[in-house]
Length: 114
Length: 114
Image (cartoon, rainbow over all chains, first blue to last red; front, side, top):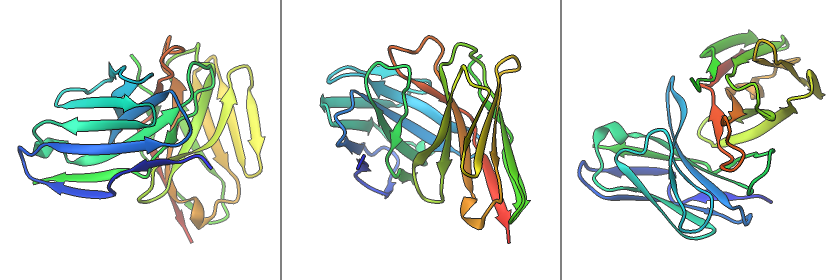
């Protein structure tokens, strides 16, 4: 069964802290994605990776960085958390180059920055 | 632009049909998708349609595609309270075959009244 897991369901951090969100997939997928979800704004792509050690900026990369040292793991890093980064963060993965590119999602991490 | 648009909210009575609409931007998208997000969970693929099709039916779900108007709709027959969720349409990112990105709509919250 296809599975994407995220390290935490809920996280509370203070302004200025460094925050790590971890995502692991067990499907041997090449592509991995980080989104944030905010009411009325839908899903917005932060960063994605199409191979180990490869990364590309999405639509809203400011304030975030990522790391992909192993194929199954994609980490999102908030170098210095701010209150406007309070949001739901969703990780997803998909197979490599294909016209059919269904993405499989993790359960999400609800991050609150105080 | 790359905006995929949906209405934000739909309320129906149990047993009625629900129709969720979506306007997308890229006429070259090969596949279009409908995802469902239940409360507190990640997104799950509900159904998809290949761009050379006008309609796809899967049990209570009917997807209609109007390529001329770039309009996608999802009809749920005999809507149940368990159908209450946020529904997202998604299209492949323009020219995005190599990157497999999806562009998501803002999501429609479907509320089913008993």
